[in-house]
View 1 (cartoon, helix red, strand yellow):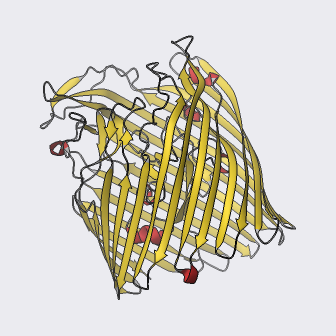
View 2 (cartoon, helix red, strand yellow):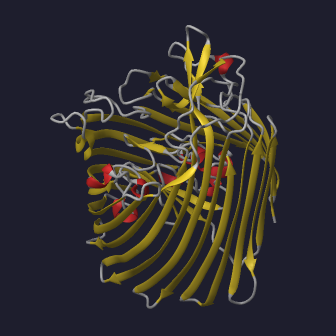
View 3 (tube, rainbow, N blue to C red):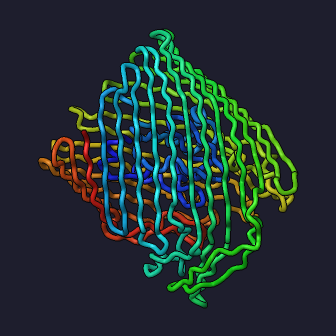
Length: 629
């Protein structure tokens, strides 16, 4: 998805942008940092990876918080299915990669200003240009604020992305980037369900405590050198550093009691993350006759300290569902550093694309990852450690039928951790990486006269070694569960004439647990669909232009989902419409009216639990001005 498409649809957040693509839905919450997705039947930050410029960030206790805003990115790529050969472990369902805008010697500036209901305001600035004959720069700054439609709905985020490029000659360039992001998301952990449904009169209620807190701060720096040693060989070297500091202090469980009309407020959790990750990536691209080889080595080390008030001993309190007494944070348990972990990773990979003929392109690749994990309990001093390893590979081919049509097929293998690699518990250190394999076939078609394109994909993914209950020793968990999905995805774009064009997609996936005894209850979940995974999704956009005016209407459909692996509570399917009316006042300036959730639809995006769902915002209106010079 390009920055032009993101701008045209007014999708300012990464989650809003990528869930317009085929088969991808959001499972985000304040607890996982908001960057949790479902793709091809697999969901969560340990199965759908997030990267920036190809660099995966460490997942700490199921949490990712960057990149959050789409400003400053040239495009956002979505790679579906196992992507371990490119990104390592934790990508069974797919990977989202945000590709940032690069410094340019041609001076230009983009400015975005927006304001809307519920105290919403946003400001974006992007500028680039030459400093001297060898240096160029790029700066992207963005900030947004809203008071929100719910109680305690205030949220804000801001970031600064900076880049400096030194290019003393055509075959050599060095890029240095330094970024900082600060987020304070809405302190909302879902709405209680009443008789298995959302009640409209509770839509604006928030049951968190008044002095709750959610705060993420991410810092990153990177230095990358690229040398085109010859027409056949390009070498790359990259050093990077990433640091995240996060804090939560909230009541996270809010369940409705129909007998009393009250909400039981529980789970008074205070949690902190201190994470730093540093590493080096070396790579070479080599053209050898009809072969294009890519060879690389990655090495990194991440250190993570988790703070908390575990064992979370605050008793449950009850508040009126319609007029809740917000109350204040209270916990008898001290907030202390509880665990410290270290994860060292080494990876080697090689890929080959072979132009066998004018019609045939064959691809093959293999990657090996080694992980060394150490864990220390900072309260009692106990330790645990493990060494993990996984092999990923991919075999595929593309056959070009003619200049507009091609067929492809591929088989790939990848791996996921049983939990976040940086936060394995002492008992989880006995487990190995899970394994998954995908088979995929597809067809790509370009329409005549550049009228559009069509892509069809059919896939089958099978994953094994997921955690299940030991049938012989019910008190223990073992590896041995299995999960699978199979489905079809169709994407298309069609230009009717100079004024009217369409683009959209539809996906169907049949996802299930093939073998699983619930690790918590021991109940048999075989045949059940994983939580927060829809069977059907669809997106459609229509754009109509008359002169300087363009009207865009977007429709999004997400099928029903289950709130838990028990499949006892079902979130209804929903369809929601968005609209953008844009007036290009000149070549350099435009004004847009953006209406989200056009019909003020009441629906849940995902579930915290069977009795607590995340309710999407209602209708909102915003005016956006953009200027380029």
